[in-house]
Image (cartoon, rainbow, N blue to C red; front, side, top):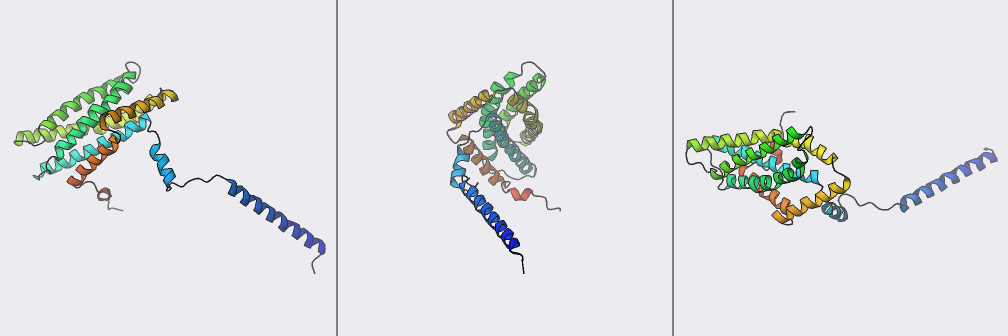
Amino acid sequence: MKNPSNWHLEGNRKLLLLIVLILSIAALLSLPSVPSAETPQDQTAYAAAKVLPVEDLLREHGVLNRSLLIYEAAIARLNSGGQLPQGTLEQAADIVHTFVENYHEKLEEDYVFSRYNSGPLKDLSDTLHRQHNAGRKLTTYIQAHAVPKDQAEHDKLVEYMRQFIRMYRVHAPREATVLFPAFHASLTAAEYEKLGDTFESKEHQQFGEHGFENIVGRVEQLEKQLGIYDLSQFTPSAQ
């Protein structure tokens, strides 16, 4: 038979554990609810979140990189003797011209490169600016000769697209990893936020309220026409 004092001790222990449990549950119930990432409230908040300058420039690099993939697919078609869907290359070059060169690169030149007229990043900034100008010359030719009339135009078109791809494969990463971080660090929080408003305003003026989304939609249509939209086809099969 157990000692009555042990019964009393065991009863106190159970009572103490019960009190702790009740207090823990009450504390949890008092916490404010946090909507999951799947809730409409969270999705609305995410959609309304402000896109800040460097994020804006980097997602525009995504449009550039997808345009380079379209050029690569076009080159493969042209070199294999296949036909490009009508207007595909013209539309791709138009996106590069209107969105990448006349909008995105103008933002870089007016608000980023202009801060580096001296100092350790001047040479980099100057080189990137020269590459913008070189890219525009290539785009002018690609737009004018998107449907080559003879073999000489075909060869020059392919060569100019290759030069464009080669340059921007190194151009965009150098901006993203060197210039943009330095640019961000050079601004105060207030300046950075204000610049985000400026970028957003310019985008809406030039392309409408959903300008970026519409440009991405145009890119997707071209990818589908060339058979490169399905991302899974690029997954390596080797394990």
